[in-house]
Length: 499
Image (cartoon, rainbow, N blue to C red; front, side, top):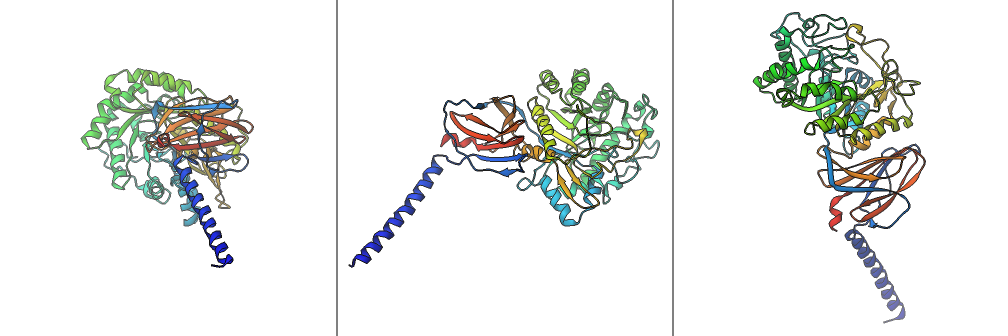
């Protein structure tokens, strides 16, 4: 055999040996659990749900870095989901786009792979301030029709209607729906002046039929309303003045018996308060009646106090068996103004997302199980809005939203709110539980969750300059860089502890 042949064979064997060695190293890396951590970031420097380089745990070591310790052995509330609200205004904006663009927006909101994967939504019962496709309406505006013979959801079936909107969204994901009501039909009230907007007791039974008809009508169109919430922001001047005591009476003596008689198993919620402190004040007197409490599936509060998160922990401590949801909050130039005020509405800058991300995080850390923003889609003017002052719906009423659609230019903007909320909705799935998570630093706001598939999700908001942090779990550690003014999702499977 010639020297050339021998050298050729030798080189081939060496090359083969290198390939085999690389394969063995790769197998060894897989077996040792390398690259078992995936990381996503949205940040001021341009990340938008961007997948960063995978990481690997190493044995735990001492470090001077801020340390976040994860302990899934201690768990807290079960997560129901995250999302926003279906209103006619959103469908009006979507209908300004062509079919392809419309589907793209809905996919970005509801698809769990390529989008935010919303799983918990709100859909009002008849008109609210963003029922923008026409004038004020209810499902039965025929005075005295207690049998509900004239009940109809015809408007909701139109091109801008809520049924149309919900069915369009359901092509891209599945989600639960809770439905509150601003106003019953006008004829059921003593009057429409402030202080008169109480339901006449003789119409309690008719109102129960009204709710039942609504649930059945939506079901007939293939839409399940999972949760019925009798009144939105009641016992206040702007909407129905109905008291929580009256709602309790309606629930136990009229609404639940009517729904059960009609074969409905819809879960009941006890009104939506304007603020967290209001929830702590107004729910207990009603929930202390066991005949009401046994029917309440969850407690729902809005976030218009902006920062009184601990009131929800106090509420949880009173009723640890009843989940708490945050079911509405938004900016409004003319009514819903946070501390420091607003320059404009809607807000296009990504930096605004940090405000909302911290609100979501702080609600989660105070026992919130479901988190729902108000308007999902609005236009460049923060509208369109419905005008009906007698029903508490003024003009103007510019508000902020998750997605802005410029109805003139057809430009679509995914706001900072969209991305910060998506880090929760996309990665923390229904059935997850919040788990113990301690340490960190003053500029890092964080919480951890265990999904039902065994994946652990750590969401970290960095409210300051770029910094490194040490994540400790199960006697392992990893160092992660948190970009300036960002939200970072760090995710791994609990099963790697066994590898």
